[in-house]
Length: 260
Image (cartoon, rainbow, N blue to C red; front, side):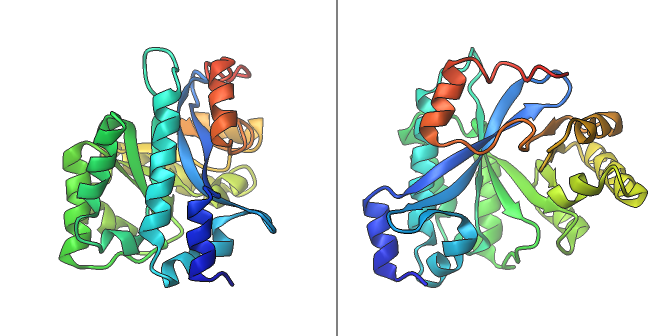
């Protein structure tokens, strides 16, 4: 259990870092962007995943402080990278508790402006299993983010609740197929059918689909066969630190993933 002081010191010492997992076009292998994942590089406990500290951060009321620290650092990576003529797109995870804060979208807009990053190159992921508060601030923030030009993503699609209701109520632009479906896509015909149905629904709603957790070439081939256009996973790349990401791009590894 961490104290509020632990988190405060972690922020002061820049121990919270954005790790970026590349996202690829599954058809031509081109790099299109990255999901920004929170990591705490603790001086005594080493690298900590969000599951080790997120609940405490929320309980101590410091979610915004950690989120905006990661947003600032992630946008720095975006600004300092020079990937061809098209800048990479970054996806940041946002917690429902933040969306209930009036003015969240306005603060995001201010940070984007200060980093000279277009809102069209940024999206925000909401875990489907997370509960969105049905209040005016939540919906106002979501709609303001869309008006700014940011993308809105349903993460872990298919494992939460009221999926269809949320799709019609809120201005989502993308959805992510949960890694559990990808893991079983070759062994479970039912799972394969579910993925195919998700892709058909997204196509009808003109939403982009990204498959998570791709680990084998056979999974990749099956996703292509079903018509999934984008994906991420250890088959392509593990999450990279900011320095690793910049080196990866500079060395040209982001240009294409060759086994097509």
